[in-house]
Image 1 (cartoon, rainbow, N blue to C red):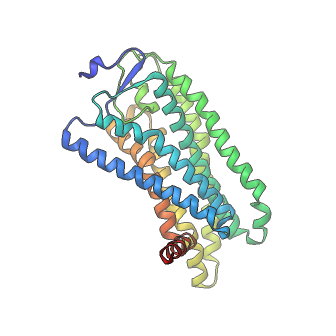
Image 2 (cartoon, rainbow, N blue to C red):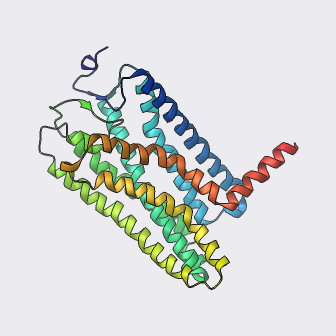
Image 3 (spheres, rainbow, N blue to C red):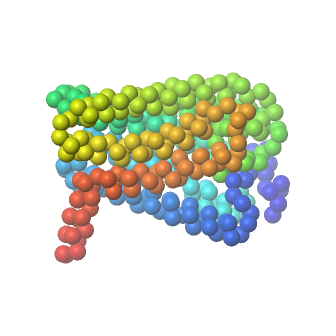
Length: 311
């Protein structure tokens, strides 16, 4: 079936996938494996935190939030990619596209803020250890998580209607794997400067503010660690932060490139690559990075596996 016959005024065609058979097979296997690792890794991390009472701390509370975000984030995009690889009909309805864009955008912003909150938690633990229980208590944790989720999902309500109010008279063929704002601006025959300004303002408020908070937290953390006398103490302090720094570097780097780049410099191919990194690769890597570098998580898994083996 020709793609031109698959669309109507209420549907869009996602052209992110190549039509070459062997490339489709490789892409399907790759995305499927990434999705399975993402689901299993993040679910395992959540279960480990739930079953080990020693992990009922603010750090692991926020880490569990991050795992929930990663599961939802990846599930918003990857299943549709897998479906499009297998199907000759790569169309998506207007409502389906709007929902995908809304949840993708809201979850992406929530991950930005949660990563910043996690950095603040590490700052409080390392730089203010005597006041940590006061600065980060259960009530504050719930408030910070609620503000992160609620505020970012409210931002999504602004962007999605603004995008879909545009007239897409150039084409309904989207050169992307899923419904994301920058590629849709290229389809409109109307001036999109207002949409771009709103997107950049939101990016400044959420992405840059979260990034700056993370950066400031780690400047203080590194300064405090450098003042620790023993090399063992410095190594232990750095080890608690290295996982988070790795995740932050990959995630913020790609999302800033995607949403703060001027439209004149936007490249569809580079844009697709960046989007896949932060929507499919990062959610897969997060539980691996935190699990491999976290002794408490590894010990809990080993204990449970050994107890199951003995049974």
